[in-house]
Length: 330
Image (cartoon, rainbow, N blue to C red):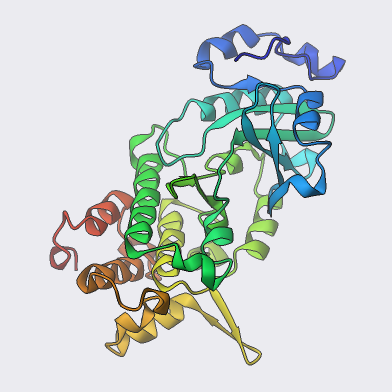
């Protein structure tokens, strides 16, 4: 249902003057993207009550909400500094563009609101929260994730990254692939979130500070030296995620006051010809052994230190689905 209020109704007077061509924006939007009022979102989330909070990340907190028509949504409150955001009209226009990018493994962006210095993004609600929350939250949760579920989640994420990297023109680099950004619907179908949020920043100052602090162990090595995140950086982060899904282990293991990264553990297992020791023990080896081994090898190919040696995401999909000769790619 379309929002009955005008396009600029949730903006202050000075901002309204900037938004004079909203008809063009409506033309570009397929109708699924809405401009919400602040009062709508406040009411939907019961005043952004702490009991409705379902997540928190580098970009801000997320609240569960119910709209007047009964639709469940997730409302993200962006908490980055105002000066690092694009102008209001540019912000809205880019969001509307992102809302028109559709894929079965992307979370649907339903709309947004600008209220003073605050920015609110409204997404479809995911019943099973994030992969980090539901899968890595406890040993009990992990039992739900059979090998078949892990395989489908891995392939789903790989397919949407191949779509963003290679099918879209211009392509999109996600920049923040990690378990907390992989959401799960009621059928445990993976939906990648925040796939275009980094594009909304004028520069990467705020983004980099939260990125480094929040995703230790997921970063491609070239990022530390150059500060640039490319498609091959996404491939590296996907490789870490794939190892995480197969092993059920945290990206960083803190044991006896020492840190050991999942990537290091996987390489050690590979070099010791003991790669299957990386498979999550919760599965009790009730798995197709060769497929599990293939997934781990693909993960290692993605996390190679030299970026040019990493496969493209379309190649990753082919390797995971066994539609490409792994030896030929060696």
